[in-house]
Image (cartoon, rainbow, N blue to C red; front, side):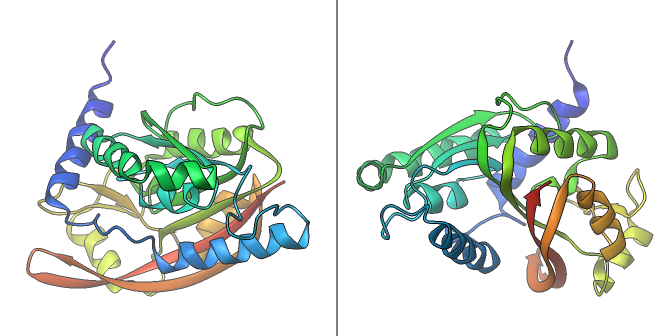
Length: 249
């Protein structure tokens, strides 16, 4: 049976990767790079780094909503073995091309990347306790409540005991634009809106909502707010994000 909603989401995101209203850039977000530095220190403290130049060797990473692969490539160049899950096939094609262009560097580092087509709101084709690190860099915002429950359960299942998860999610607190979008372009569930013209549905979270959601499965090591400007069409919008460092309970 064909999942019409799933196919619709695929088309919306493939169009987004063509137009690049929200996605774009080859450099990982600063907050993600800061997290990687923090994790490198944690690994060094626990004597898990065998090569200072390739601090993420032997780290198995699941990149949820891997897009065009900038975060996966960043870690693979430092020795990680990365699996990316992405719903937009054109994004996967671009990511695979970039990985091929960097194949020599990845071989030297001992890193690798494998991309899989699929939704992060469905069961992951990954074994239990298989991953050391999971990334969700502004990828789960478009999931509905049912999909988000699966995403959380699956992230907990595939992450090894004591493993880490990095999450950047949309913040409702301090984001007047998001609050207005909820009024002007309401989505199908609470605290959701549909971006006009782009048609992407996004969920924003209060501090209580996001803390309650993730603390069921993870210990929250760090939770902070950050701000960025996003240009859509001719207008720039100030957007608020939550940045979280999580560890599996």
